[in-house]
Image (tube, one colour):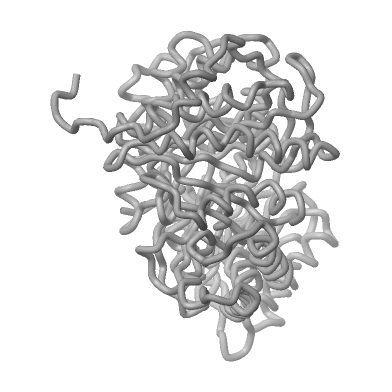
Length: 89
Length: 451
């Protein structure tokens, strides 16, 4: 299952490291990543592949939300399908 | 990757523009529950609903979490209860309470279908049912009621229309402690649709399957934002943008609806894309009209702007989903839209202008507070007018007015939450009673010679 992770928040040291660490711990593979600073906000988008035999979606979502709360940024995890469906005919 | 632009656009819609799935409504047929013994029948009703809808809330929340779009309301609609045989208010109350208890048991906030279809005539059973509605609405919390009074094929049942005024006033009186809130849970329809997922008018039509999932998507904020950058655009360019935006919103709803239906093992019915405002800032249909260039909703030009909006929304929605149904268009519930409330307070939006706007919006006179001393015949006459607009123009119309007990024009009724607050509107004080007292049945309109 593929999902898109969106991280938006005030820039600080180690955001990418900490997100990647959670993904690593849950055996989630990063397939693509893009990151930029938009109007002083750190904005990172990741395309990841979740190995459903090892991690379920909820587990990943909960872990990332908890991390977001801890470091004060918004982290959303959404199945990739939603974006394809909405924007392609 | 190109997809990232789409991701950010979607996130923007979700976080700033209130894009959400407004409701996932499970329709349940109760035809096999109705028997001669109302005690046994109401027990069967409770058992069937609690069995079929047991997992609705859990599954809908799971799907919403996975796609990152919240499904705000989980609701139930059932076969019009007036089809059950009962003969007294006490007996109908058994059904009302069975529905209310079942809704509470499965954790949904509203259950619709305490309804009757009397567009051509009332049975004995229907007549006692109408008498029971005020009690049902005042003695339950999550129950919604509706009556279909007319259709393009059969005309308008004016005998039933005559009964509406006193019935609505009684509901207002019985729920006077909550500013006559009971009336906000009742809708008088013409050309009611059988698969509408939105409340208070949802019921599971008799031509529907055993069990079905219908989805209602909203998003006035998304449309408003899309139009904000178009100061110099012509009307057709605006219509095109609305259509494209409606397409995106509908696709999100289609995906979520199908997934909920798959996981529950229940067929997907229809998707209803209706711009349904909430009192939240930026979640307003009236504000879209303002962005189009009207100083306030209700100014001259409002009917034209709303007509274009409703039509463009329908076009975008139809392209995006295999089964678009329900009401699909734009709702104009006064108390639930903060810019409409402001327009009413400024004196720009009047009852008569609202009536004109209902000839092109997707439903009708919705969530309008009127003075508590409005005569019953005047309320019936409002319903007759609205039904006539629907019947002649072959569209759904509805009336949900709240004659707030003890309040007069200029006061403000506040029901809180999604229902919002509304200034009590002035109404025409001239008498309609002799017309309403005639009763009878208004003949079906001719379908050619359209001028």
